Length: 192
Length: 192
Image 1 (tube, rainbow over the protein chains, first blue to last red):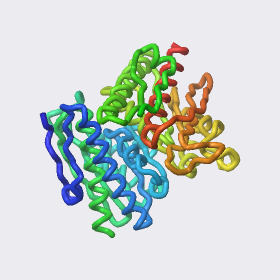
Image 2 (image 1 turned 90 degrees about the vertical axis):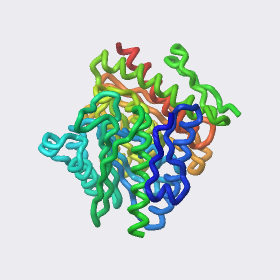
Image 3 (image 1 turned 45 degrees about the vertical axis):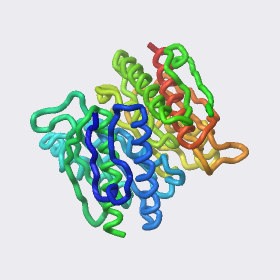
Image 4 (image 1 turned 180 degrees about the vertical axis):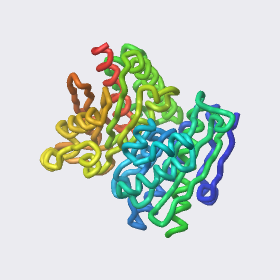
């Protein structure tokens, strides 16, 4: 079983494998390798542009921060990451408005954009945020399992996107991480 | 090459493999399996005792939060995790005293204990914190690469411990995660 290949621009160009396929024992290794390659490229780019990255993760639960800090020397471009799993944590740490959470739900464009704004307000130059339904429960007709909202931002602006990833909980989360890192690279390359 | 088996009490009793051995492609999978087993046991214990866990990670950089949120339903016992990679972040988010950081260094008992206190002050019932030198750089005669301070705490008290893990950056981090999760289980089982 292959749960699909996502190939956003940076990854496609770089030749980093984006396959998330856990039917064999080596696939966890493959995910780690893609993460490692992306994290290294990202680190080089951030260092070159003199920028500090901050993260705010809901459904990926720390996996983006873990991927970034897997690269030695990452303290030069990464100071803090927030895993805001509960809505109250999104409010307290990132200043996400309770009314926005109530009106749109945690898995929504306004919430991930507010999360990015919160990270930038805490002092980061570049931010990424995720909020999604990794499953197996929590899906609905409107927002099925696999739905992940992602946002990337700098002081110059914020971009957000919704993806519906296939696969089980871990596969959804891993694809969201690769997609998040790829989006950061795209944003930095466009700005650089 | 086998970088050793660490077998703290809970893991030893449960039969969860603690080997961190990355000489073959299946070892990343083995780490994930150990994490998953520990994370599920931990979730059951927290849920049963009605406790909420919080994390503060430096050298593990989000890997503990990632392991915990790998378990479906973890939002019932995990609300937020902080990846305080920079000293300033440890101060701002966790209230770690600058003088303590200056005097003892970030990789020290007073700092991980202050990180745990910071997590508890933010509202968690149970806390874990890590700060270490994952390498390949940053080691000294006094604190070689692989040195990791860990602390676990509740309102009833805090316990801290220093380990020196063998292996490369990823292996040091993975062993620290398994050790951190194991320590949480021990603390909960002693209290339960």
